[in-house]
Image (cartoon, rainbow over all chains, first blue to last red; front, side):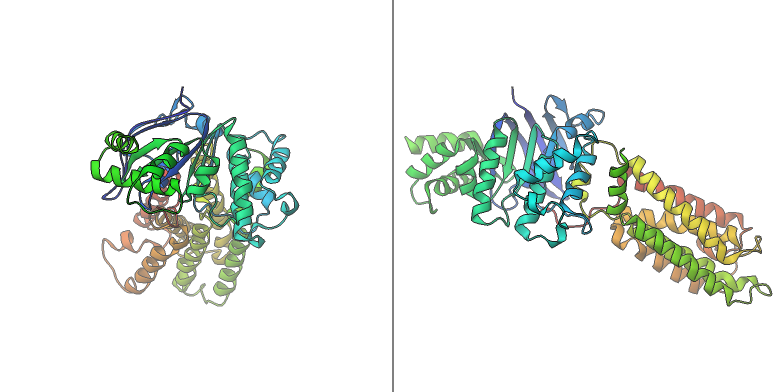
Length: 266
Length: 202
C-alpha cells in the first residue's frame, strides 16, 4: 500500500495552473522528482507538506486525508520537510533551531535534546551544534535544514532541492543519508540534479507542465537515454530525461509518452 | 507547550526586543507629554495620543514576522492560540504602558483615549500584516494616521468620529466603536490567516 496517494490534484497560482489533475503515489524508498523549472515540483512538495492547499483533488498521507483538518496534526507529526528556502532565526544556534522545529512537531520535551543532537550529528554538524546559524556557510545552513527535517524521525520526508549549495563531498554524504533514510521512510526529493537521482533514488517521477511525464526507475530512464536518438545530455540518464520530456510534450499524456518511449527503446 | 519551546518561540519573534522597545516608546511618550501645557489645553496632547499608539502598533506588527514561515506552517498545533496570546499580550502591555504619558483628564485626551487608539492601531496593523506581510504592516497605518492627523484639524461633522477616531476625545462613542471594530476585525483576521508569507515561491 502506498504511503502517499495523490488523486486528481489541481493547484493554481492565480491564473497559472501549477498541477493539472495529477495522479501519483509513493511507497517507502527514495523517490526523485525531476522536471524543468516551473514544472510543478515545488507545488507538489508544498501540498504534500500540507503548507499549501490544493484547488482540487485528494491527498492521502499515511492513510489520512490531508483535507480533513482534524487529522492534519497527526500527519504533520510524522512528516519532515525541507523547503527550498527555509529561512532561519538569526539569533538561534543550530541546536536551538532544530529544537524549535522539534517543538513545532510536538516531540516530547524529554526526548528532544537527544533527538536534536542525533539529527545534527547525522548531517555532520556535531562540532558546530552551538554555533549561530547565521555564522555558517551556505552548505552548512542547508545541512541544518536537513537536520530539522529529520529530527522527529519522520515516516514521510520531503526535500525540495536539498543539495543546492552543498559541495561535492557533502552531496555524496547526503546521498548516503538519503539511501539510509529510504530504508525506513518514504523520501521524496525534488531536484534538478540527475546525478542525485541516479545515485540515491529507487524511483524517479518526471513532472512537466503540471503532469507526470514519466515514472520508472533511474535505470529505466537511463535505458531510454541509451537508445534515444537526437537528444542532448552528458550521460544516459540526462538523455533519458530529455527524451521523456520530448515524448510527453509531443503526445500530451504520460501513458502515451511511456508507450512511445518503450516502442523506441525496443 | 514546553517552557523551552515557548522561549524559543518568543525569541524567534524577537519578543524580548519588542517589549524593551515598547517600554522605550512609553518613556519617550512620557517625556514628550511632559513638555506640553496640557492642563490648560488638553487637546495639545493629541500628537502624543495619536503618535505613541502608532509607534507601539508598528513594533507589535514587526513582531508578527516569522523568518521561517514555511516551516511554521508544518506545526502540529493550529497557530491561532499562539497568535492570540502573542497579539493580546503585547497589546495589553502597550495599553498599560502608554497611558502613563497622559494621566489625568480622562474625559478628553487622557488614558482612555490612549487605550482606544492603541486598540484601533493594533487592529489595523494586524490586518495589514495579513494583507501585506508583517514587515510592511506599519505602512498603511502610518499613512492613515498621517492623513487623518493633517485632514482632521479643524474639521467638524457627523462622519468625523468615524474616520478621525484617533483624534477624538475619549467621550466620543463613535470613535470607540470604530477603534473596537478595527481591533476585533484585525485580531480575528490575524488569528485565522497569520501574517502574509514574505519571500519567493516557485
